[in-house]
Length: 446
Image 1 (tube, helix red, strand yellow):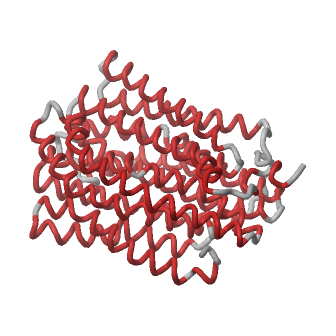
Image 2 (cartoon, one colour):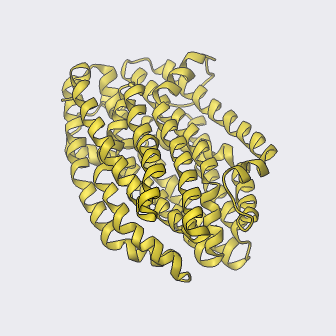
């Protein structure tokens, strides 16, 4: 059996085969974005826009859960893929098992701590008296499913590392369909309101978690569960490598909080509903960047670990060519489709519709710059350079946004809110170009 037959990451990729390899991850992320946004559409249209606002109020807690899972997943994936590239398959399996177990334990700890301090968390996130009951119902159920949320995030990345991206895609599609179906059953048919939305999402978490666990227990791939060595350094290395992803999600949590507080002050609950629509739409429209980065990162790690500089250069060149073109299409779709997106969410609330439509006309420019930033952060993670990756993620999702969000609304009011993200992405792009040039001799990707 040749190396390529044993491990798909060892293939000599060209542009078409690399995109084909990353395609399941791209579709998986796109589908996740679609069913996430469908979830909020059900809440907006079949409950009310106050319930939609409440989802965004408690969103920072969900960001924290996803951030911890993604940190372990991407950082651990780099560790595991590199060891597979070095031929240390047994050690890679042990590390993989340890990472998954750690993720499950962290999820259970979050459930316990979150339920213990539930009310304090909700008030601390800025909920108004009108929004508090919705927030409590939604967050309680989300916390109960926290461990499953962690697990499905881990498996999304580790299926790719195991050379099974198509399985990850199939499970994401299955989970998404289940979420949409249960949203309809719980929200529309059973009239369970925002509780129904949370339960539907939780069931969506469970499907890839349970099936993924069974798959890796059955030892159907080179990467599977085994008795792990309790090596704390592996977890520390994974956390260090994936720190940028945690930084990114925690930064999103903080900036979401700042967006909510600012819009609540400027425009009340309707303002929070409008920013909710745009934030969720942003996630949907950046899924192609995220999915492509997720799908190609293990290939980069493998070639870096195996010392195949020629294939590493070729892979990175293909990736940047792809990332250079897609943002134009995403920008145009957002710019000209923003009004239609706003109408889907807020057809029954004219004020929310107008606020959202006006926001899209400015916010859309962020998509021109975010693709390169997202991929470059993933590239440095794949190369085990957590510092460079974290710097990009921190500045694009927190540093620059916070500065602009705190300063611009004082002079430009709501327009300043919409400008914060495009300007943050533009300034981050300048840093990204600098870091790519600075490290090119170290990693030989150019």
